[in-house]
Image (cartoon, one colour):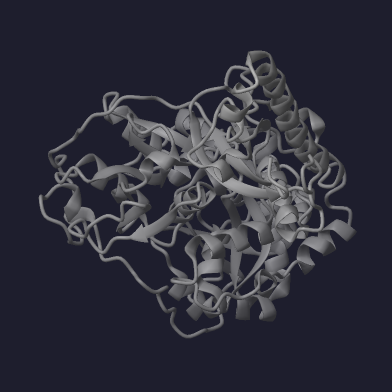
Length: 546
């Protein structure tokens, strides 16, 4: 042991994943769209578009003005907005909607898969919906306010990869396809960040992948990103990041050659929020309050009795190319958590203890994209306009509602020991020759907070702390005989367990983590790493539900 022991934390996220390696889908699917360019070899490369090296500039700000008491809202085809559709009784404005009957306005919903932030900025629509990470990317140029959270994606977003890829770390040096500046882009960046890996944006498939990074290419949208993966003729693209139902469809169509590496089913960092044109919010606050109240009521309607609203949801989201029926609507609703009033307040205050908070996700996005893209980040408070939520709370609207976000289990399964989803190292500093953590060290405190956050954003997850010490003295101990070596090995195992237990103690006492979610064990010098310094560590294995 050194006079001042440095401890390495290996964070291992575990999920249920499949195995096997193969190259597949070398030909273009019938009807594949040839948008964009970049890359030779045809197939998926034809779907890859130019990578933005800067955040797109939005047009000038304007003020939306409602006409005939109708408020225009643009959404995408996504079950997470089912509460809005249910409250409106469909897409068209009508006198029988919750909005009309209770809040004195009518809502017209347009469905679009385009990122219409220029239109929202210019005042061509009253409101839309997006995820918190998008706000962090566009920053001060985004002429919008956030008056409420709509919900969390719970398995709707996922990473689909070739079956031979078992963990995020296996993507080092590999190429994934996604859609730039979307929640899918953020999701893979967040996972790479947690794995301690950099992300490289490739300009085309002709570019050379960085062998030490997760390499990303982009399609016009996340659906086409998976088409680029499945039709890639270059053999470079090993997976895609998208959302349901494209995730499950891609796996199904692969014939066993692809699998879902992970989803956000129990990793709650993709949070949908309502974004309202800033000028409209200032000019017509009563209509914004009506929107907030109506959406919350619609969320409760779907939470309490989803069966009663399947017909209207399926009809609204069904298209010629992607038909929805009641069974499809029911399936997609299972991947969503619709937020109620107390959960909204907890989400924005930072008190959420079973999911990501607004400010936490926002800051994670800034860090994940890095200064290369987010050159002049703004504080998350810039977007918040919570007066309507607070007024509804004061009026007693949320009476009887509680924060209720629980882990989603598969057939009653608990945390499963399997191959890790990703791993990284965090260093802790202890007092000299002891198992007492140096609580005056700012990095130690930051690392404890990071461990707490991992448990917070992943309901049902647990951590196993496995203590390790270095084996640099083993050969010297052997000179004194096997009995002495055995005695020192036992002491080393006990010492390594003490250090793991110290981390648990600080997590429980300082960070208020439930002790039942942390286990400890000592491994002594049985599992050395490449160097003496690396070997002095506690390995934290994070077991998640999937």
